[in-house]
Length: 157
Length: 428
Image 1: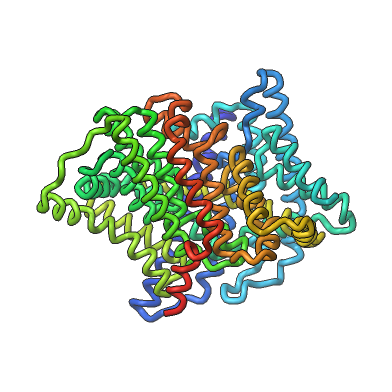
Image 2: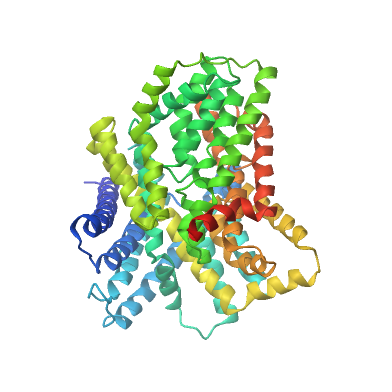
């Protein structure tokens, strides 16, 4: 399997995970309403769980999402200048993401013993999303800049 | 000075085409390193994640999904038939159908792009076939789809509510009257333009036809009632309403209208996840931005400086509106909303403008940017649907844009338009 094919499957895998996370949020939120009115049950942990899943959804989704930018200058620039702008965006983006991922490891240590009140699990799982999602984001950002066709495939699906 | 570093870096980096999320982060990082070098950098991922961690924000993902499903579910077609039977015989018949359908669809979807895609896909072609100028058809659908985020549910209103600490329910209710005014105003323009453009009418539907179209659309028409009624009546939160909307559309779309399948649902989930992610990371990045603004007292100083000029309140509001219109011409409305609200909120609260009224004003204002050159997304989207040049769309859109600006002026200067309905409901 070539590197590009591997990246393509990785991207699709991440899409599946993001879709599954959204589906889980949908089911749990619906269950809150159904439980409250039809079954007389409340799930006190459900709000915290869906918030945690949402952070994972956003950061896993961010690795693959098309990010908003003002593209007036890049689309007006010649090929060389456009390439320079793409490299600038890549260097800045990867630098910032690397900083955030590294600092998130510190947060994971700091919050290891803080727990969600109702859910009972450690708050550090919020910051694990930054590490995992940020890691994939860096990887795919580099790949998309090197091989734009990998990202084009995503749009055709 | 701090504001200069913050905004200056942001504008320069974003202007170079760097994604907004990284433009915001680099401006925040640079500002922190200059004005608060003693702070640990762990603050950055912490504020980033905390800025995204809110139960109300989940509603954005769910309403995104509802909008994606709506387009594919076969609901649109029934709403169009319903609109056609009711308003098709008026002057500029199909244009009136477009406005009316956009209004009804807005009750299910929370975004202008979803509205334009759903209504435009069918109606722009139908209008062209009936002899409407393609530019007119595209311009009409473009401006009518602004109703999507004004009539509840609304993705930008949720974002504003989270940023400003307002109630999502109150924001939703506040959008209803302005939305109806926009629909009415656009309808009048279409009526007036029908003569000069020689637009045909549709044959008047018979009573049994109207009854049949209404019955066929009734399940779809119920969706906005469930969403708004449920939130208003305190039956569920806005986030839960999003989930109920998705389940309802899934149910009628797959079992009654039979337009949905598992693969459509799967790709709608992925698109909703990507759309949500691209907005929410900007929100996360901007929470660092907003933290610096609060930490340095920037918005307070900014408010004091503006009020120190001694300009009357109406002039301040006018200038804010002009500034937002200018920003909206270049920046995505959601991104602009996220960046501008923390800076301007203390100022408008200082001159006695209600948080909810300001929210509707800024959302409507920034949405107009979707219909104005050079980067109005809806212009290009509807132009390609109508197979017509964007210039033609812009030319035909001018009277419709005038309606949007007129309603914006009313929202800005007549508080009752936004505040009457939430107050009425709260008072019961």
